[in-house]
Image 1 (cartoon, one colour):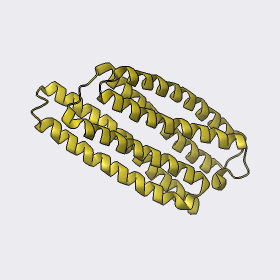
Image 2 (spheres, helix red, strand yellow; image 1 turned 120 degrees about the horizontal axis):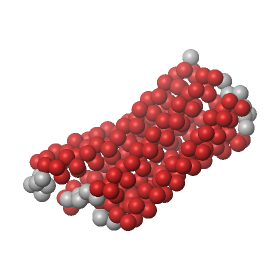
Image 3 (spheres, one colour; image 1 turned 90 degrees about the horizontal axis):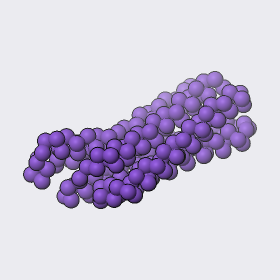
Image 4 (cartoon, helix red, strand yellow; image 1 turned 180 degrees about the vertical axis):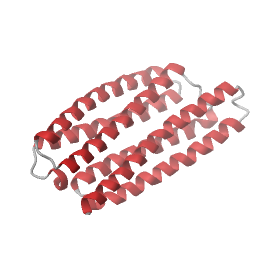
Length: 217
């Protein structure tokens, strides 16, 4: 994290590292929990929900510590605001992942066998977008010159998730396997919420690019 917080407290660097690890672990747990739920293993999915909830709690603690240290170690005000806005935005990803798993565990949607692979694929694409975003955030602190490559890959995974979202929605509403309209709406809802993770990742990637431009000017 040499470019922005060079020569600052090692404690701040560690807090940011630990915070980013919480985000990464949450997205991976979301993928595992969602995949288990698609297969009907709701008890295992409930365990993932509890794990994500704990990670969210720890992430909040790290974020509060980061906010304090950004002031305590005299980070430049503009950089301080950008860092906190970026890291705070990552908290929305954990929150969305937790809500998705909670809603799946409560409602227990039955995914048709013919659609399970696509549901797993869109979940994987969204999680990949988040994982690449986290790598980009680390690059933002350590080597900002490599940032654009990560941002480009976030965009690619977001587009992949969008394409899968459209494909699955068409399958839902054209399928004779899912007959009840209420069930069609339920499945559509989950597809949109899963794809939302990649949308959040894309929005933060765009913000990082703006932060980089500000630092160059």
